[in-house]
Image (tube, rainbow, N blue to C red; front, side):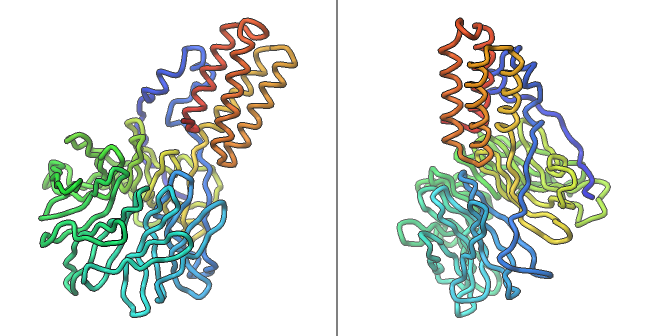
Amino acid sequence: MCKKGLFIEGHIGVWMRFALSALVCLIFSAPAWAVDYTITDLGTLGGTTSYARSYARGINNNGQVVGAAGTADGLEHAFLYSNGSMLDLGTLGGTYSYAFSINNNGQVVGSAVTDEDQNHAFLYSNGSMIDLGTLGGMSSYARDINNNGQVVGYDILDEYGEMRAFLYSNGSMMDLFPGSGGGAVGINNNGQVLGSAYGSTVIYSNGNINYLDFGGPGDAYGINDNAQVVGSYESPPGGGSWHAFLYSNGSTIDLGTLSGRSSTAFSINNNDQVVGWSRLLPPPDEGDGRHAFLFSNGSMMDLNSLIPANSGWTCLIVAYDINDRGQIVGYGDFNGQDRAFLLTPAYAEQWIGSLIETVNSLDLKQGITTSLEAKLHAALNAAHANEKTTACNLMNAFINTVSAQSAKKITVDQANQLIAAAWQIKAALPCH
């Protein structure tokens, strides 16, 4: 089994401290990181035996996942996982494809082999895979797409591996840093591109280049809408150890490791949550010692410590992406196979269940108890089914009912208690 990494206790987030009164804290006493997760094996595209593998690379805020998976004929194709099923996105005429990113509109980007046996960047939109071509090089790879449909990646110029960064927008591909080499790995919804140029990590925005200094050699892999960047850098410089970092407002934050010498961060959402991998010390028996991690509220935690026991997962190895709902994707060892996983936090589900128990404990009149419980049970079912809008509407209905009965069938103190707890659940869903 996966050995557990070191756990560093963090602080409760500011929004939670604001939302909870002392009384509600007695009910919801678990700290922000004490959250149960459900784990889903995303399966394959029909691949069995040695081809029963899959890898998840990207997830959007609707819970749709992309990556690559084994097919029945022993190949690997890009997939889109949505509503419990995996769709084969096909190729550009060749044998292989891989998806890297998906935006909130369901558009997918990656790389696929053409009928001329070349790798080309693709955009999958409205049921079709579009060949984005190259900048004139041998091959191209699309790495990220924002909600405006802008795509970034890199072009391989020659057999020596020289690269150029590209931005694909409004049907055309442009060279971001002519003559500089490098590539692009991320783009946020503000159009800021994370990449490398002139030997440095840069953020490109509206024709301007901002050079990033991490305090030592480093590689960046992800950017969020606040222009916060994550990756891996040598810490301390010259020391030979590479640590995951978060770069924000000109400062580099060393995220540390679970216990070993190295770690890498791949993605950051708009809630400052970071995912990646970290090696353990001493190395575990399985794999190469890497464990997937989540860094949240100042804490790095081993994702293997957060999944249900006897789940069939020997080890969660790498976490590649996290959405704004806190859902995490990557790959791990599932019954001896490399398989894509989807982790979904049960913040709302846990707290709705606790609120139902609280309503029962207040000894309210039967009619009001039944009404409040019915709304909460319906909200719980909606949250479990990922029907966020329905769950939010039901929590609003719960709050409205409590407010209407305050100082009537419910005391003012009881009403304040229930409403504060309901607002915490709304923040966890999240509702807007």
